[in-house]
Image (cartoon, rainbow, N blue to C red; front, top):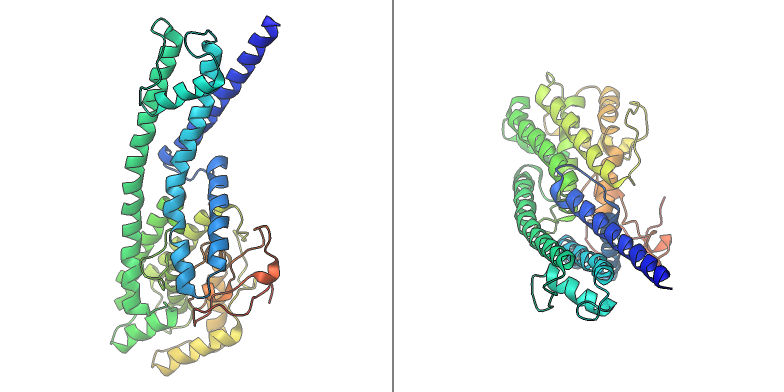
Length: 390
């Protein structure tokens, strides 16, 4: 019986060791490693909390109310994550204390072991450790050091998040001056040409946004919570801003009858590469990495013709209509699916040619049928539910 008891204690202690290792490895991948690591535990936390927020947002009647609910998701999940990791560390150390100290003078039961584990991790010091028990003392010191490291990581992590968020939002806010609110590619091109500009006047814009795309690729895959951080203004969003810029550069290269701008082409390439890398992190946005120019896109020909006519009527020199359409399709196909997928999972506000053709995907949430999906409309009001494929 004694042998069975010792074997059981060792087995439980090994489970505790594995839980500690698993939690520490997840923490390193999420908070320390400078690359996009899709850690299982972090993914489950995000999914569970996001489902709760989507359910709460779904009950609201206007877009502004839904945005106010969803704006809390990223900050809340950032606070919940370290609390869960700390709780798992406490649980992991508990059976180890219980195994190392079965005697009556120190840790004699699981409840006392749990008490000592929490006291050590939080460096509270109210649970006594027997002075002669060196292994338990070493374990308590190790756990206390881990607790301080966790707190230090959180303190360093949050400023990094908000610094990257501020950098991203500065250019998103500036886009409203050029592309309107909500941002639209045609508005950007018409305003520039109306004010006497041309291809050269936009070169600096493409250069800044090329750099912006490179920045969000790095930050939004290594700090994934940034994907769900919403802009201070409800009608702004980083995904719709990216869509407006990519469409503007694509229309410039495909439609306008002027020499090709190398800056706009590089901006498009940087943009769709960046959005693909971010989409890859989630693994739920399918796209063709090597699409053909005649693959289907979400923009209908009549929609394109309307914009084509707007640009032409604004005095902008344009290419022949069919050639312009084929050129535009050749660019849009590179980012169409990832743009719409990111707009959907982030519940982006209404914007032409991006979030206006997506719905919030509620099918993965228990208790909500596909017919209960709803789309964001220009009025920002909750319209008749839209089923997938309608």
